[in-house]
Every structure is written in C-alpha cells, then in structure tokens.
Length: 324
Image (cartoon, rainbow, N blue to C red; front, side):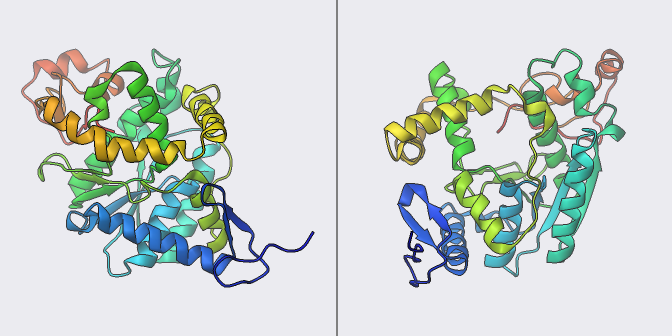
C-alpha cells in the first residue's frame, strides 16, 4: 500500500487523518493547521478581550494540555498560569499530577496545585455517599468551584478549560433532548463573570474535536494521561458520545452542524426568551449561587452546614452554581 501524502506539503508521512475534513497531514503541517484554527477560534469569539491573565485548568489529559500548549504557542506573550486540582483519586491523581508537572516545567509555566482533601472531602469520598450514581456531576461541581476560587484569590481574570466540540455537542444533545433550555443558553465559548466574585470562562477548543486534540499532543510529542478516570466507568456522558459518533457515521458533519446551529440560530433566540437567574451570595461561603447555599458547600460541608448557615458569614471560597 503506497504511503499517504500530506495534503499540504506532499510529504509521504501524512499520519494524521482528519476524518471530518477527509484530509491527511504530516506532523509539521498538522501543528500549523491546529494552531491556526485555535487562533481563529480565540479571535472569532473575542476571547483575548477578556483573557488578560488566564488560569488554565490542567488535568493532564489531551484536551486541557492542548489548550495550554496551544495558547502558549500561538500567544507567547500571554501571561498564563496553570491550575491542577488533586481530586484525591488513588493512583490516577498522582499520575495526572506527574504529567502536569512535566508539561508545565517544559513550557516554563507557573503551576498552582490545589488538593481537594484540604477542603474536607475528596471526589472518591463524595462518590461513596449520595453522589454514588453521579460521580462525574459532583466532580464537575467541585472543579468549577475550585477553579473560580483560585482564580479570584490569585488575581486571574479568566479560567480557561479544555472543553472541546465533542464535549459541547454531548451536553447539547442531552439538554435539548430534555428541554433544559435554561442550561443550554449558558453553553457558549465565552461566559462573562462579574469581575468580583465570578471570573470569566473561555473555551479555546470550542471548535476542536477529540481527534484533533489527540493528534496535536502526539504531533508535538507531549506526554498526556492516557488512562480513563476510574470513576467514569459506566458514565452516561461516555455512552452519549458513542451514540453521537454512531449518528455522525450515518449523518456526516452532524456534530459540527449541531454546534453551529446552537451558536448561530438557537442561542440568539434563547437569550431573548430566557432571563438569566438572579445570583445571590451563598450563606456559607459568600460566593455566587442561585440558591441560599451553593452546591459545593452542600456537598463538602454537610456536617457543619447547619451551623454555618446560621452564622453571618462570607468565607474564603467561591462557588459558581450550575454554570458549565
């Protein structure tokens, strides 16, 4: 079988086949392709306007690593800091931290490590309680809270996450299926905070697929965590992604079409029809929530919650209730 030639330069080692685009590229051309696309996405959605001191949430996986490496490559003057949240998952968290430290050392990026056990409970401990059937949901709540908390405390105006096109389409698929339009209206590449207790959130990989992120770290020769989180087994998010790829095989371009329709057609209508919930201060920690007590405080502090709610106070943590 003859070697596949790169569609850009004609080189014979075109090992990266972009399935939805039906084209193959060599490593050098692929890196240029990916970084041009990332830059276009950042500029298209005005991310640089709010991303002056970004805090990149880094898990060690291909997506968040691609976001960090890509931003540093495309915008070298950007003052980037990385954040790793140690969720306390035996074996998996230690390996993830090792990989995160390696990539940040190689890039010369400052790394902040936050250990969840110091907050009271790790994710496995939470998953053994009432969140047993939805460990990914409580994990997401915890990470959103901590990301916002650390950004506020360290003076970063924006949190950068590695959510990509496949992640977004999977969530959109479920939200529209269930008619959860109040949540769908918040699913966008840029979410603005209030500049006081809630940071901006941006997703520079909003238009990148899982495949593209995987190829990028491979082409750059960057080590990432390849194993699955042990708590994700049986998660509905995984089965929905499998289903969406099956639909894509029958309807080519389904993922890109749904994302484009959401951004260009549905969001403008939803923004006019649905008012954003009024945010109040959590009675325990004092940071934004749509209820009296934020999800993080309800999950992490059930023993002291009754006492804390009865006290006056604003604490030193922050919560971003329900925002993706």
